[in-house]
Image 1 (tube, one colour):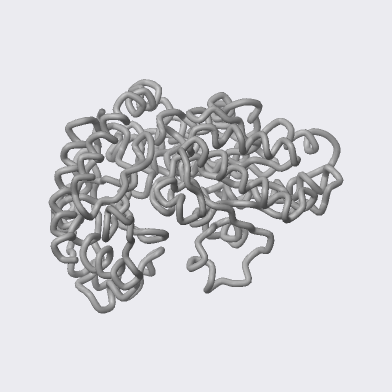
Image 2: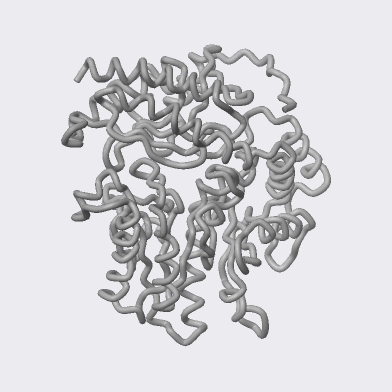
Length: 467
């Protein structure tokens, strides 16, 4: 791949840290890192699957930025595509107007999407795409003469975004408590963490667990009343909690339930879309057809912000004629530069066969990470594609997890910094049980898997010695 030339700019780290401390408010971060500590890591450059900080130190990007840079850093042709489009038409809204790149990208996405998902509504990112799907689901049922269908079902610990509507779908209580009351109507069912299935009251095979977990959705629909439930929102592989893949038969059963009770099924593919699981959409990987797909992140590999909600013909039908209008939209949705970058990014996927690469190498990636199961601190390795989570435990035999204070000391007090210092940027998270998450660029292969495993082994071994 052609990489952008290395910038020659020299960064004054001390000055940058001072400006950050005085003016920058970071997302999902403790500001005390800047106020009371040595400062925040400042990343200045990316190339392939590596990033560099302002001090010149090199790191392996084991999280693709934030599940985003699927095609890798420093792609010159993506920067050039953005520049060409900006020179021709830098901005124009798609509010009652259109431009070529938005049209072409909508056509491209509809071609990738399963079934009859043929309509594309653009946004600036994933949370907005989820917000779009939530609002459209409620409006659709009103247009169909069922105004009572307004509730949405999602899974425990699932993250679906931070706008008020998307936050109602998010299943992480601590993330919502400070903003209550959020948009009403969100209800939670068990997730597909088979490693912790016994804690949910289930014992049995993986296949049976899939049916059990899906049937909890039916149970919730029945409890709330099918006439009140608009949609079910599910990630094909749930991110928050540590990469929960669907058990065999899970989505087949969920689709049956949604069809039986006249409930929409939304696949939140903000992370799993665009090669992360080995196809343009993980819905294809797992063989089901949702009524809507929400996507973002890997759509442009992060070279420009973009999101989309892909909608079935059934949902679009009430809007085809007359004066019915979906009064919803975002200024930068379908932005010409972002659309141009997305099209070029998708060309890279096809030319370099990145989806095929993920499908071929995923079993090797899994097997390499599973070597870590010989460590006493590693309880489970799970995930799919290039998207894996490693759950950390105090006792492998009993699956005893760490309490809140222990998690704080383990993850924030040691692991996050130790992994970074060892040259691996990834995520150490405890929204659920403590996990280390990996989602590297799709361009890497077995040699890089070994590199990641080696860094993790050394750091996790040291972490165990500190417990």
